[in-house]
Amino acid sequence: MKKYIFLILSCICLISAKQKTKPTLYIIGDSTVKNGSGKGSDGQWGWGSLVYEHFDTTKIHIENHAIGGRSSRTFLTEGRWEKILKNLKKGDYVMMQFGHNDGGAINDTTRARGSIKGTGEETQEIDNMLTKKHEIVHSYGWYMRKYITETNEKGATAIVFSPVPRNVWKEGKIPRDGYTKWALESAQTAGAFFVDLNELVATKYELSNEAKLKADFFPTDHTHTNHAGAKLNAATVIEGVKTLKDCKINKFVLTERQIRKRNKKVE
Image (cartoon, rainbow, N blue to C red; front, top):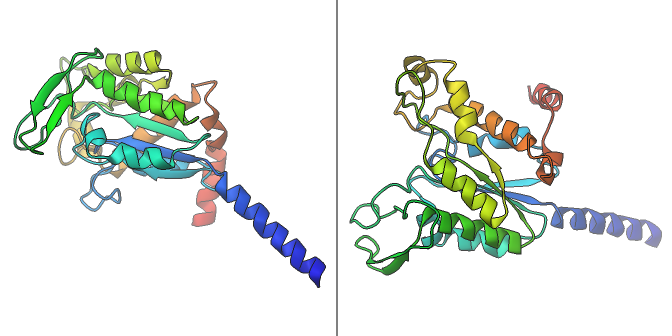
């Protein structure tokens, strides 16, 4: 009897140890990554809410902490990054995509979420009219480097994405987002993997046209996708990740065959 009890306790300990070492993928960003509650209640979806479909979630835990309206600056100043950092551990991953809201006003009474354009070390000291707090505002690149550096210091892996494109066209093409260059520079300087999501998705969008994209993916506005649009963007995120040869997160990515097999079981 004692032998069986010992075996049961050993199994419990092994299962518990396995659960504790299970890595976590943290996702941070704006509404194009997670819209509202992340469950499509308003018909709008971010790619972070659907990217889990491409991972073996029995081996990696996924937490989407992205939130609408945030910039690289306000995700930090609101204390959201600090909460993640407390739990971030060696072997974890952080996917980050900011830029859509960084071009806004640096100081006003409604949002005050803008960051200084570029990747430099310049600052702007303000008395924030919205938060009523004194604040030193940095560049987009400064905030991105902070996320990357602190991720690396924890022994985790940072993956930077350029912003997904909007359904905005000029002369038959989708203009590439200016934050792509700064996202790349930040990744290269601080030591992170980089995926040019803006280019990858824009190339797919350009196989269509503005009117069809609006009907298929952007029924509400030119920035926020529906479920179908978020699904395409999530699949493109994975396509980009798969090109990162030395990124160990790929061992958790499911093949198309595995996804089909899992979906059949669900049905």
